[in-house]
Length: 242
Ligand SMILES: Cc1cc2nc3c(=O)[nH]c(=O)nc-3n(C[C@H](O)[C@H](O)[C@H](O)COP(=O)(O)OP(=O)(O)OC[C@H]3O[C@@H](n4cnc5c(N)ncnc54)[C@H](O)[C@@H]3O)c2cc1C
Image (cartoon, rainbow, N blue to C red; front, side, top):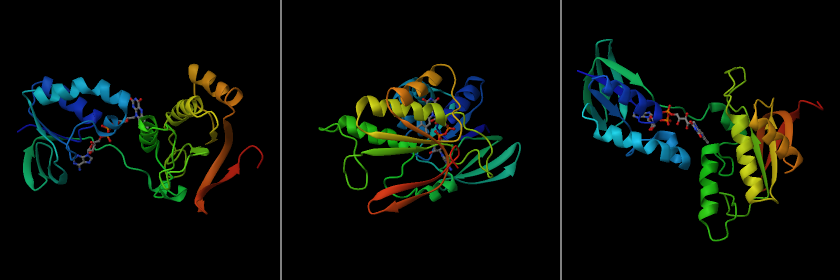
């Protein structure tokens, strides 16, 4: 019968290729019209992913089901029934690789307001700046030039609901802050952090951001972001000053 892999991001692609190479018949089910998931939205990652997408499309053991959403799953090991966009698929095993969603807690940071964005959205805003005639970084809400930008780290992690550190956002924020200061030196950058968990070269980068680029690192917990008169106010508890 074969194996269903649900989700055509990098995890699903990798699982599908490994299983197909091992001789299994694989149904790769992706709700979007293209493979790639989140990585397809990141320019550098998309390039690295392309050869694997081609391999999936040409693999004789993979039946690629694009624009196909898993609606329900029933059965047990050895005999599963999946309802996929109205069709039924029967398999012996299922690999779930549906990726992640924005955590609920993000809502208290004003997520939903056009000017409160995820890092993935921010990549798009940077790309739009590069493609525009002026090259300026513009606010999604009203198209005005961004003057101050705040990064809130640890959203959805290191909290009561989820104690685990992502281990990614300190280094990622530092990279983004560097890109911003290199391209838009007048823009003020604030980083709300709990601890700076970076190593090696990234440690040097954080020091450089503080000393050379004037990035303001604020050791804090942020309970909420308040929209006020077309601007955003970040409310925070300063963990150093109290
Ligand atoms: C801003 C940012 C920068 C990053 N930079 C890097 C980097 O430089 N290097 C790196 O290695 N990682 C990076 N990452 C992390 C990387 O993007 C993720 O780890 C990776 O994309 C997760 O892959 P995934 O396959 O688990 O999930 P996803 O990429 O989210 O893929 C899940 C797929 O499942 C599909 N799906 C969900 N539900 C269903 C359903 N019911 N039916 C059918 N399909 C479904 C979705 O449409 C999606 O295509 C970055 C992440 C972010 C946010």
